[in-house]
Image 1: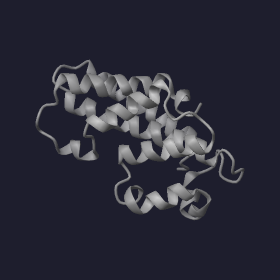
Image 2: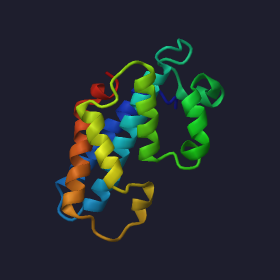
Image 3: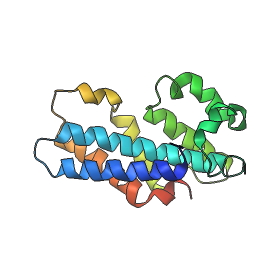
Length: 162
């Protein structure tokens, strides 16, 4: 399956529907937090790749796996791959940093309301795919914060690229 910005956004929306279903179920906070983290991650990745590939007609709207064959087209992505993308593709601070760089490079403000909210969340909440093994309950306050940010990313995702 081709991985495009559009397919990433569709996956983000599907994970969001799953997260909302768990949010409504009492005692399903860890699973909900896990999925909300993916919603945020996919939202950041899709926004980054949309901005980063916009000026490259050979990459814009195409299968993003091409970047593995042409990493030189996105210098910040190339540099970051060694740090977090390849081994730890789920690094929220790393994807946020890449998005901020792409926004800056394209002349966009790096501190709109949604970017500031995501930045604050990423600085305070520890999220990783390792949550799939968690047995400790997630605090409701922590879940509410992550859930609210995930919801804003889904409902206002254009703010990440505008």
